[in-house]
Every structure is written in C-alpha cells, then in structure tokens.
Length: 353
Image 1 (cartoon, rainbow, N blue to C red):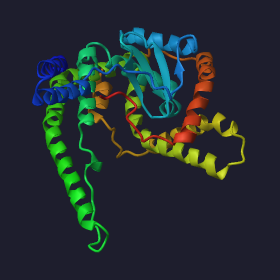
Image 2: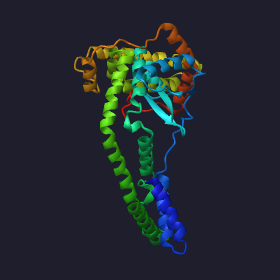
Image 3: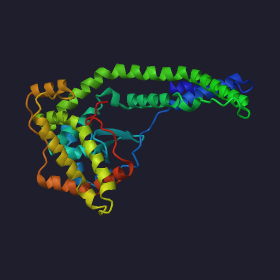
Image 4: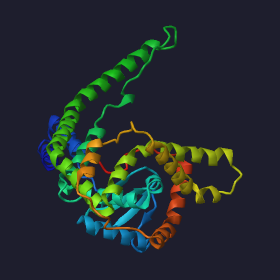
C-alpha cells in the first residue's frame, strides 16, 4: 500500500505538471506515503546500553535462558527506569534488544527475574505473528501514520473579543476563517486517519489468536526455564508494579528535597536495596490476604495445573555477585535519570503486546 501510494503520487505529479489539481493530489498521496513509511527501530539513546563485552556474566545468563527457550539471545541490553521486561528490535537487520526495568529487577527474586526474562524472550519468537518483521513494521507504520494525521488541538481559536476593542470585528473574522480552515483540514484527514486505524485494528484482530498462543507458549518457556513456582510467582507479583514505582518516586523526592546536603553517591548506592526491601515487605503483607487475586488468574491456574518443571537455569551467589558488579555503573546512570526526569508510570512487567 505504501509503495502504491508513493508510485501513484509521483506519477500524478510528473504527468500533471501543466495542471494544478493533479500535483496537489500527488503531494497529498506523497504525504500519506511518507506517514506510512517503514520505521526502523533504534536504541534509546537516554538508556545505558550493555553489550557482551561490557557484561559477560549477564550475557552468559541471557544466552542460557535463550537456549532453553529455543530463541536467539539478545544482541544488546538496555536498563530502564520502568517496571517491565520487553524485547525491542533495532536496525535494518532487526537486532534484538532486551530492555530490563530496574524496578522489576530489584523487586523480583533471582528466579523470578529469570522467569520474566524467559517470558519476554520467548514471547517475541518468530512463531508469534505480531513480532515478525513484516507485521511488526506494518503495525508501527500504521500507528505512527495515524498519529501523524491526528486532530490537532491547536487548529481552532477560542476568541471572544470585547465589542469595543480596537478592530474587534476584523479579529473575530480572522478567528472564524482560521477555524473554518481547521475544520476543512480535519475533514480532509479523517478518511486516511480512519483507514489507517481500521487497517491496524484488522491486523491486530487477525493476529490475535497467534498472539494468545505465543503468550501461553511463553508462559511454558518461563516455567521450563525458571520452574513453575517462579513463573507463577512472577505473574502474581505483577501487581507490585504500582506500589514499587510509588516507592521509587518517594525515594526520588526524599533524596532531592529532604536530604539535599547528603552526598550524591550515598543515596544512589542503596536506592535499589531500599526498593527491594519495600517489595519484600509488600510481598509479605500480601501473602496473608486470602481474597487477593492475580491480574491474570487464568494463566496462573493453567501453570499451576501443568506438570511441575524443575529450574533449568539457576543463579548461585558468585553469579549474582558478578552480575551485580557489572550492573553497578548502569544502575547509577538509571538513578541519575530518575532523579532528573522522575519516575515513569507503572507498566506490566511481562510483555503482553
């Protein structure tokens, strides 16, 4: 569709230079083609990026998890201030980047971290239709194109001049003319915007069965890799996202306001330890609540009823220490970013899209 729009727009412009209507139509179609152009993902430049040479122990763990799940290991790892674990693609070759949210990393015990990473890696396997290159890039292009031709809130002027003001009639007439042009533009963009949104919804609906199947297969991969108990616990602990992010926000405010004269390195060194202790307290308080339900009870029930799997990947204390040493500087960079930009809203820790 994008290629047809581009070729049609060029033909209209070239063959209709002696007219006015054809070049205008060609420019309109060219704008739509540019809005629907394929998007090549990029690494987030604001996040610390790790490659195998920077963190060999971490990548050795990721390689073992990927082999157990039957997928390719990630090429890079980025650490983010969100409560999530996702896999993104970047570059023409669509290399894989594992984006690990440090609030989740701090809140989850080691086996639950392995389960969350295994789920994220397995969910983006080639058998998952929405993660394939063609479908994923089509969805990204349609979403970006819809946002490009969205309604602009500044397309209208709310102007009520005083009748005795100087040239109030001319100002009111100019405001009405501006609003009319805004309405015409909105009507002109309604058709392509609706077509893009409808195509994206259709594509999502057609790939929904495959996405649901991939989600359940990712649950099984997490259970095989980190044990059924760790996979179930990771699903149950999804509801820690909001309270953990609230605690992170509180720690950021406390560091910036209540202790401004304290050394800048002291609060950063124990920031994630405090977050882990708060998550442990929340987990203990929640264990006594019999009325509490999981955010996805059907998946928890399915894993609980499945045959028990022993953990294929485990972490001993020396391994945890090596990974902690490799992440010390990136963790400090993420804390600096949180101090500067604040704490993002809570997200689901396991890839669900």
